[in-house]
Length: 119
Image (cartoon, rainbow, N blue to C red; front, side, top):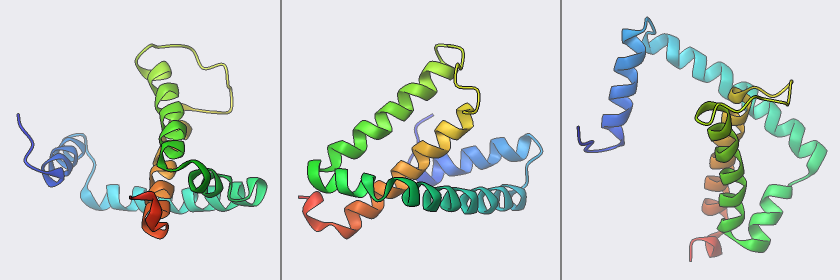
């Protein structure tokens, strides 16, 4: 099946969720709750680490963001595909996926607010 657009992918994902008992409203509610938690986590980490992500991207360019996302992606792959055991007891694969999503959003922010990164 060839996808025509991102909309096709979203439609397929939504259909799969609905087939498994999820409604669009239930998915929307789950997203809202978890995005709010992600924002809280972002704020807490920014207090602890400062704007290390933004500073690193400003210094080294967008490749710095890709490196961080690549590390998270490799962690997810290790846990889900390679079936390696998780030795970090307080970090679930879902935590790593949320980190990956946040790095993606933070990269969008850096690209939109730092014009020289897109050149």
